[in-house]
Image (cartoon, rainbow, N blue to C red):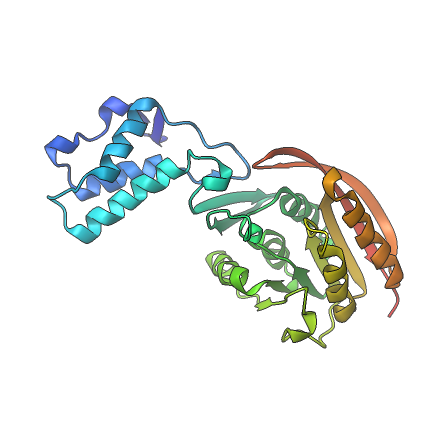
Length: 292
């Protein structure tokens, strides 16, 4: 069963509008608005029963000739979107995720996940770090920058806590990043910063007090590129939250070694528990400082 709302009670597939009776567009949109799931933190999407799946499939294929074509297409798209939510994480269509970070309520749009757009996904390390910032707001500094901001969870959290922060990522990711910043009623700047060519960024030459980074290493090329960006920014402090993925132990340690070589001292090193859409995971928080 799917929940229509708290006061309307559960909807059974037998109560779904009969398409043969030509239900109005408003009725179809109302039902679809209750069937389409908004992700909350990293909760699992509930399975559809067979009857509801069959009804949605019929709706996607129906010409809905009694409704104007543009409205009918929007209805079919919404039905297809809900079906896609059942297809697993890597096949999932665009979703909006509601994230609770302490008392903060954050909304994040996540476009469909593809292997070359992993930054479009909210990862567990971002939520773990965001929660730590809420618990320890004194970690934040006067001027902050986030590298590889992705969907913006960490940077948006910092901004809601009052930090002056710049969010950065690749050009194709910044578009969605800006959208998420605006949807959370913030106006913090978002800029392109490509780790492979950091000096091409408009931020080259600017100084920040704190660099925030979560889950930056999932390729053998990442440590060197990330460290080049950190070196360019030359912040007094770096906060790093990384998952303990055995596949990338060498790369994670290369980042730590590189930070030492850049003159940073590791003041804190703590293990965290968390999860994302792929299940529970272990994370490591580290806090680095240096004298300019």
